[in-house]
Image (cartoon, rainbow, N blue to C red; front, top):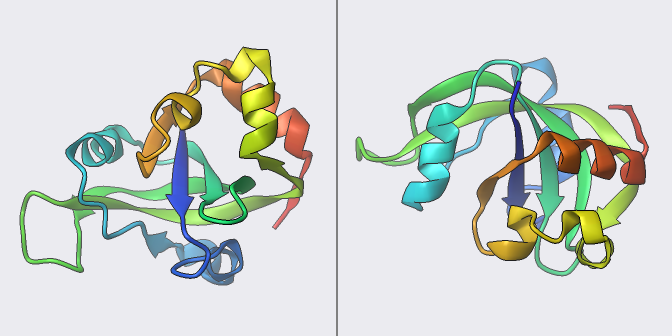
Length: 140
């Protein structure tokens, strides 16, 4: 299993909207960065990801699961751009802020810290475990 992070501006797509999609999930569309697209092409069914609210909140608020592997992005007629579908799995009882992540020595090399503008990025198993402990999950 691999782990990922998906960044979203809450004003465009929020955690509550993602949760409302239930088991069917939703396309993670609109990604127009080759590196992020290539990460999505690596994703497999059942992989897990953090759902990160960018802009003002700047915090990981929940966990999603890949429910459809890479396929053409339905929002554009251009074969270069793919997306995956994700569904909400668990909410964090306490959001894990970017400030907390930056203050944690073990997370200093995390992509979120090193490549903050990338909208889809990998997360190491060690980073995953530590952040899950920091956020204390609860069922969605």
